[in-house]
Image (tube, rainbow, N blue to C red; front, side, top):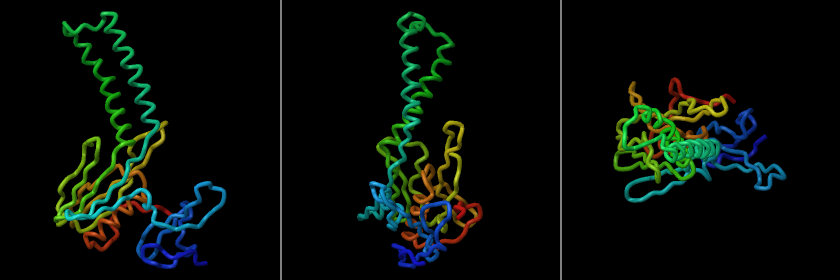
Length: 236
């Protein structure tokens, strides 16, 4: 039975296009992901079809080219861990200073080991706060792709990659970190030219967003999508 047409290419979507383990369809014509959404009250099911990035991906075009941006995923567990860790760490440090066990007028090699806990707290806190405030910006124009995360600078931003170095994009899934001993998966967007591969960006929180970014960039650059060995595709 025909459900509705794809919002990108107007191809009719049927049950044969629906992925069994996901609440979305994969358009057989343009390969777009189309989500099944519910109403805000979740009192009844509404078969409402829209591109999955409608709320997560922003597009802006000016004289410099096209800019795509998306918000980072908030990680409440990391934030709580950072607050707990830093609270205990600095309580202990200030207590040792107050009791005279840490004195800054003389060097003690043990102080070097004491730097470990504040460092872990700072890194975890910075990472957690980045998830609440940061956006990633992908600007495509002037023969290059620039990627930047702000307002909190992030290590690994890749800037000014020439578009001449790209003739294919694809997605790779990887274990970003573990939470409660369970792996948390994120996605990398890879660029490829002939046999040479480049990491374009990582830390993309879900496959739907990663796929949308891939398709948008390929469309802007006029790249025809082709299968790449090792790329991730969900099992439907």
